[in-house]
Image 1 (tube, rainbow, N blue to C red):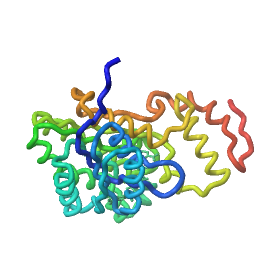
Image 2 (cartoon, helix red, strand yellow; image 1 turned 90 degrees about the vertical axis):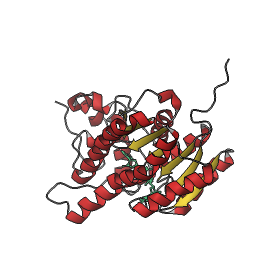
Image 3 (cartoon, protein in one colour; image 1 turned 30 degrees about the horizontal axis):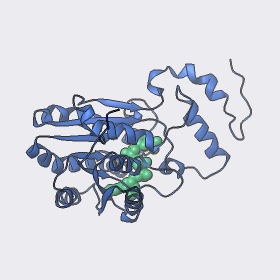
Image 4 (tube, rainbow, N blue to C red; image 1 turned 120 degrees about the vertical axis):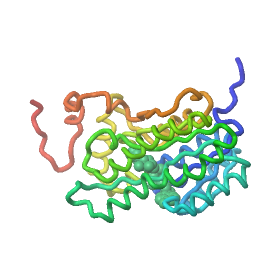
Length: 286
Ligand SMILES: NC(=O)c1ccc[n+]([C@@H]2O[C@H](COP(=O)([O-])OP(=O)(O)OC[C@H]3O[C@@H](n4cnc5c(N)ncnc54)[C@H](O)[C@@H]3O)[C@@H](O)[C@H]2O)c1
C-alpha cells in the first residue's frame, strides 16, 4: 500500500485560541492544533492565556510534533500582526490559519447591551478579520494558503444568541468574500459550522449534576446520529480543509453537527422526549 504523507506535511500553521477552557474534554482550538501537528504541520499556538496553550504544546511534543506558544489577544491588531511575524520567524511562513477564537453569548436584541454586542462582534468576528489581515499578504506572496474560520450553526438557525449569531453569520459572509478576493492568489478560505458539540467551554456553563447530564443527552439526541460530538470532530474537518486534499474547495461552509441542519425539528421530538428531564414530570407524547 502507498505510504500516505500527513495532510499538512511540512506546512506552517497558526491556530488562534489553541488552548482550551479548563475542564474535562478538549476545545476545538486545542484539538485542531493537535490534529494539524499529527498531520505534519508546525503549529503556532496562540492564546490569551499562554498556560492553556502550553498544555497543547506538551501534548503535541509528547507525540513528536512541533509547536510553539505565542501569547496574544487576537481582538487587537498589534497582537495579530505580532502573531503572524512570530510564525514567519519560527517556521519561515504561514500556510494555514485557523481562526478558532470565539465565545457564545445569550440574549435577544432587547436584552443584549451595546457592550455585550460589541464584545460578541469583537471576539467572534474582529479576531478573524485582524488575523487574516496580516496572514493573507504572507500567503499571497508565496501564492498559496488555507484559512479555516470556525463559525457555528447559530449563524444559520435561531437560538436566542443575537449578537453571537450575527457575528458568526458575519464570519460566514467574510469567508465567502475572502474566498472571492484571494482565490487568484492561491488562497482558499472556508468555514466550519459546528453544532451542539461538548467542549470544556460548554460544560463550564452548567454545574456538574443532573441538569448537565440532561443537557449532554439532549445535545446528542438532537442530531440524526444520536451520538455526542466533541472538539476532535471539528479538528479533523479543519485538518482536511487546511490541507491540499481540499485544493478545489473554497468559499464553503462545512457543517459538523450530526445532521441537525438536515431535519425538521418535529421529527426529532420523540428522541428528545425520551430523555428524562430532571425535576420535570413526564409529558405525554401526542
Ligand atoms: N463548543 C460548541 O458547542 C461550539 C459550537 C459552535 C461553535 N463553536 C466555536 O468553537 C470555537 C472555540 O471553541 P473552543 O471549544 O475551542 O473554546 P475554548 O474556550 O475551549 O478555547 C478557546 C481558547 O481561546 C482563548 N481566547 C479567548 N479569547 C481570546 C483572545 N481574545 N485572544 C486569544 N485567545 C483567546 C481562550 O483562552 C481559550 O483557551 C469558538 O469560535 C466557538 O464559537 C463552539
